[in-house]
Image (cartoon, rainbow, N blue to C red):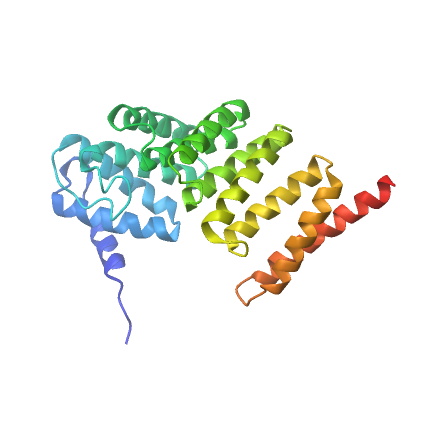
Length: 270
């Protein structure tokens, strides 16, 4: 028997409809359901016109209650329905590589969210990170560094550096610092996140090992070769000890390659 997806059926109904200014509440609820599914599947070309229609509806009827956001920041702030719709439209443009449109949208979303909610709210930090990451993509590295450093410090102040969002902010900041050749500061930050993750998760947790690998890499890049060798050797031993079937072998081999590069650099310097 052929199984029919409810979302696919809803999409067919929308394609048959006229849409636009005459979208009914039922039509928009169908659009939300389909757009969310298309976003999960990264089918941005079909998601884009739906997001535009959802935004138009929210602007026409700002008091309408719609289950647009199943969870997350905007689900907790239904009063920001228009801004939330713009945020999802930004993500769609970003997925399509429409960076100018994405930049205009996320800049406005960030401004409005900062006006409505305190800047250090974890959800607001996530939106600020989106803007900073796009700055990096567009080559605005100085702006990205300033923003990411402030975001990282705010996560630290909230005690959330160990969280997935704090971890992403750390990686983003280290990437920009690396591109700007600010590697001493990057090494300081890597040491900090290593201490945080070790305290929070223990020495052999995945996030602790990722932080230890960052420390090893930046020790290598800053030519602290003796310490880099010690750290990378310890990391390699722990990675190989913890190899599992879920990709651990790839991580261990990557670290082994770094270790061999450090050894080669030491050999060539003597």
